[in-house]
Structures are given as structure tokens and as C-alpha cells.
Picture 1 (tube, rainbow, N blue to C red):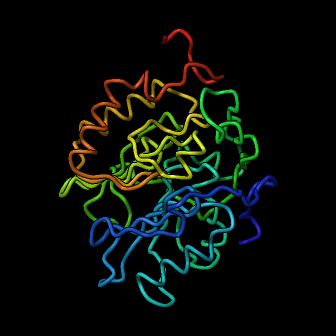
Picture 2: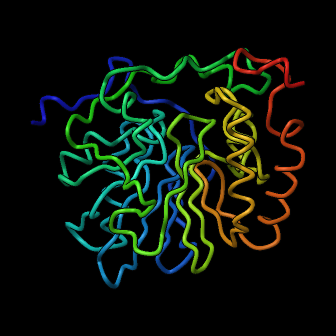
Length: 285
């Protein structure tokens, strides 16, 4: 069975990092965010119960770090009950093959991401011409071919529930990718946003390195549908989250989160949508 799961031929280590790399933050007693180079993974579950899931799978060649972080938090030889993917871009599935082989656990994603996770279709090429900084210019070197998880990938339940995460529901938040999802817990309004919005300007190398905090739209160089992305941010802001962990940047809560999200929704065209780039619809400006 393992022979059929593989990365694309362009899979490789990406030499990008930030000052937050290697840092873990306990956002809530059962919500832990850990930064791998420039992207965040989440461990969701209380260490006392040992039942948890992993949300997203980091950068290429980060499996050993993810396993080590998991065992530090949940004990030796611990493994998640499942891996949930917010989407399938390279920096969110970078260690998924090794993790599936090591833990032998199911992986869940929105069915619209399946073509990119079963070896059928590559994502649209990153756009190095998009308005933005050096990370956007570097984007052609990012792995883009689909990975193939074979029969290890399963569709998130159609009722909105999240396997093994009682209290959370998944919300379809497309724009950055067709099947992008965010996870929300109504009880305390905690949000795992993926890349629907982020808390750092991801196309600026300086801001990625320093992790300067600002509520921003999804990474520009990989976002292909800006109107859908705007609608997804509206949807999340309407939930009035009290705490958010995003795919890039530091966790945010309270007034900073509320004000930042409100401003992003109101000024999305100025803040998030680039002035130019091959995925920018000129008719919208």
C-alpha cells in the first residue's frame, strides 16, 4: 500500500525561515501551535487525555521535528487520531507522507482538494509577478506538483463535523485554494484559520523573517480567486472569533484579532488584493 503514496518529483527542502521557527505556543490548554520555518502546525487536544489531532503537516523534510514536538507534548510514541489538512499547498503537506507511514493514521481534507492530494492535478503555478516582496519572487522554486496519498486520504464529513475533534466544525473557506477549510469551535469561538487569513505579510521576506504582526489576506503568490478569498474572510469575521491560529504568523486574540479582521474585511481590496498579478481580475478594480 505504501508504494502508492508519494510526493511530486519537484519535492525538496526550501531554505526559508523566520525568528519564530522552532517555537511552540500553548494558545489554549488544548490548542498548541508550533512554527516550522515559516508555517504553523496545530496539535489540538488536551495532553492529559492523550487524544489529539494534528492540523497540517509543515514544510518539506520536517517530519522528525513534528514527531518530536508531538512526543514532547503528548508523550513518547504518541500519535494523533487523525491529520486534518486545511489545504494541500506544499508548506502544509510537507511531511505528510513520512507522518502517514510512521503513524499509520487517516488524513482528512475537503473533497475539492483531492485532485492535488491524489496525484491527479498540480495547483496553478505560483505567481512571481504578483505585487509583493521577495517571497513572491522566490515562489517559482516552491514544490507545486500534486502529492499522492492514495487511499490514506478521506473526505471531511458532509455534516461539518471534524473527525476526533468534538466541538469543532469545518468551514469551507476557498479562494487561496478550492477546498481550503478553517476549523471553528463555537463554545469558545477559537479558530484555526489555515491560510484564509494570516497574521503576517507573507509575500514580504523581511516581515516573514521578523514575523511582524498584522492581519492580512492569504499569501498572494498562491491565491488564485480573490473574490472567493474575500468572501471567506467575511464568513470568518462574522463568527467573531476570540482566538485565531493561522497558517503563517503568530496566534492572535481579543481586540487585536477583532479589529484586525474587521479592517481586513472592510479594506480587503487595499490590504489583501494585489494591484497586479496573473490571478488578479482587473475588472474588479
